[in-house]
Length: 321
Ligand code: F6P
Image 1 (tube, rainbow, N blue to C red):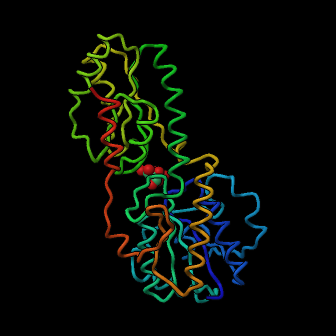
Image 2: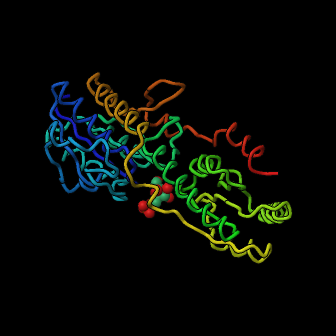
């Protein structure tokens, strides 16, 4: 491998810049040329490709977002575009690409490797929903952002003696809800994986808690469960407790990455380049049982992951009664 490209794809995540920096700096220190591909696969198809050097990644380790921009590219699912992308890589002398993103982005990387371009995936998503790894870049920052927001909601909720239904991101996965729900002492944590629409249990619990003198109630609801506004109305009507719904939304994707996100992103970006230098392709970097490891992309995509069972178990002890 002589020249590598790096791109970010799918939803941005805090720490992506730290990963880009690691790819560029490791590539250069290993004697490679490094090119940045802007706006993910969409930018690759439009040849939005720039030369990168050590300076181009100065002062970015602490910033959120991605300096390479990102996009979701539906076209890339078609073989003709995968072939076109590989031809563009060859035209620019790119023989290896590091793809920072989620499962959809890794699928694209795998298709590109079938077309003869070496690819390595780095897990970048706030959702933590990549099965082969216990850590994804951006999750730690997102949960801290959400936790701080919920702490603030609790202040106003308490002052008005209200109930708050707080919706957090995660697409169809409940990891953000589970972690932020535990960390903010929520009374109920609703996740796509475990919640089956039994709103009566929530209502009964709020009524019981009110009788015991509880002044506010926080319900953390995963985006995949949704319907937070409707849920708030139902709770208010049934309990007589003023209830507000708050959808935290995209603020969870922004902000300066935490120390953990910066360090893990740096390690994963470095490892991705080292794998390319060893001649490996169609692999994804992960973190399992205390070690940075790599998996075949197809194998990684076929794995499944549930919510941490012990964390789910403790929610019964700590949040519901
Ligand atoms: O995958 C990250 C994520 O923020 C999800 O939690 C959410 O469902 C989705 O992206 C939102 O995507 P968009 O930014 O396209 O609205």
